[in-house]
Amino acid sequence: MSVAALAATAGYAQVEKASVQKMSAPKAAMQKFERGNKGNMNVLKSYSNQTYYLPQGTYYAGWNKEGRGVGAAVIVAPPFTDFTFKNMMAKPTSGSWAMNGQDKSSLATEEGDFMLSLSPNGMYYAPTLINGQYDYTFGENNVYYLKGQIKSLASAGTVSTTNSIPVEDGYAVLPYYAMNDHGSSQNNSSVSPNTLVGYGFLEGTGYLFGSGSVTGENNVVTKAVSAAQIFNAPSADLYIEDFFLGGALSFNLGGPISGDQKITAYIINVEEVDGEYQLGKETIATFAASTDGLSGFASEDAISGWSAGTGQYKGKSPYFGSVTFYNTDVDKDPLTGAESPKPVVIPAGKPFAIVISGLDQCDLGMSCIVANDEDNGERGMVILEDGTSYTYQKRIGIRLGLDAIFEKIYVPSTGFLTYESEAGFPSNKFHGWNVLRVSNDGKTVATDELSGTKYDAGAAFVGTSTAWVDDNETPYYDIEVEYVEGGEGWITGYQYDGHLYDATEGLSGFNLLAPTCEALPAGVKGRAAKITVYGRGDVKADNTILVLQGDIDYTAGIDNAIVSKDNANTSNRMFNLSGQEVGKNYKGVVVKNGKKFLNK
Image (cartoon, rainbow, N blue to C red; front, side, top):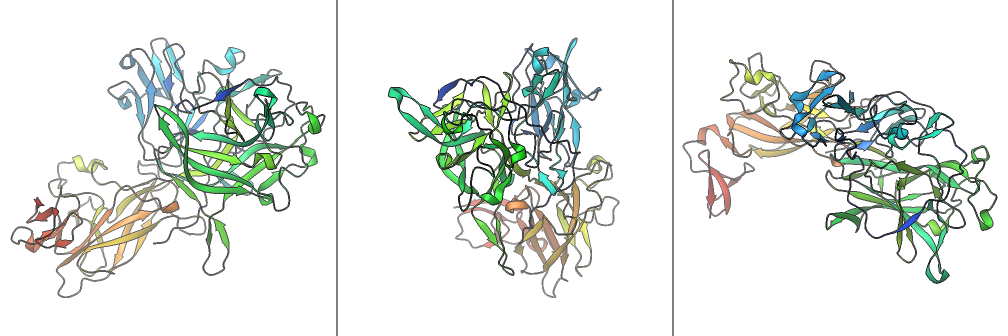
């Protein structure tokens, strides 16, 4: 099995780089941090009993390290995944749902929530919750937007399964750092995003997150050594190439580090204790930033009007740039010896945190994101050398971005095509679109039990987060074969057809995949194998493809157990649930004569 390197596909349009604004805000208040409140960075609290919560495990789209991003309120969700907009009405079932003005109440659950599952590489209208004369749409009808001072400039909220957007130097991958139109501010009658610089209580530098110190009890001065940001659990496997601090600050021309210096960062687990999140102790991966990961920090990027610095920094203006962290664990090309940082996969359902350390050894400030009251996101935190942690009274987080992608591979079996409900469809024999029958000469592939009918697809359907190959025909996806019965090595490769991937007839996001096979040897009645599709970071499909050749059958309802047709009802041969033949002394569940038994 081989897994191809990451590149990204095209998405939506670019917008201009955010401008650097003069900062004159008062210092933010601080409070001691013991444990972060468990929350969802995508939650909208009910205002007048007519809003909805955004889906768990999705992220706001924001800005990439090149300073480009999206201007609308956009959340990024994985494709082929059920996600739910939580209805916050007092009587949820009394409301109705629409999308782009069209009634979609048929997508409501019994509890009155709204459930979606979408194809990849799309931008979809956010749902509208209708409650009598009131309606609410994420983005456009946000009642908190600038506290009603001016009308939102963002379009109605959007749900995106587009995993990348084009940038000048190739492609950057979504999601970026959390941002939405709620955290904007009014500046001279115009709207400014809240993802610029910010300063707070850290003495000396005056940074909000980053290098500096705190004077505590008995005038003890304690340095800030780390900063951390908790991310809620992704709703699908999250493949991370690198991460970056957008809008980083440094009083040093050229950036916060120089020469052979490095800043270390850790992806760690997050534990739930008494219903609350706290930083765990498991290090998932170690990343580092060196001078190779710096951009900006030039004299023309100095922020005019900065007045927060004290001591050696007083009267100086910090410089504005970006700091990128790469995995210290690398892959090495066996031919060239070239090294590249390994990607990291955060499993679906696992919250995680990024902790940036060594802040006492450099001069690094971190811009912030600010969410208003309805956004119940995890706040960033400052960690001092004595172990004390601080967070801010308002919901302020670190402007930390991820070059990442939701990697999802979906192999449907039954209940997938409307054919299955037609009167002529052999539903009594059909075992799934993922069960393939190869001819004895190995030259043709058919959907099992559908050969010769109009329903035969001749391949398995495989939904993927991006197209199967990049522009250079290098695959992002590959297969692994497990031989179940009848010998090994007879599947020699595979063919894929991607013409449906960007189609509009209801099957967009799907590829057709068929194995290439050898002819059935003389003396072999039948054989079977399972194919698993793998994508980025060895993320595997949620289902396997079963390949049959010759006189062999798939016994429905027996967890993919394989039995020979000749022996299905006349033999005492026993098989385990993986289809492997076992002896009479085998302990566990076995299949004998097409039936399941517990062999003690």
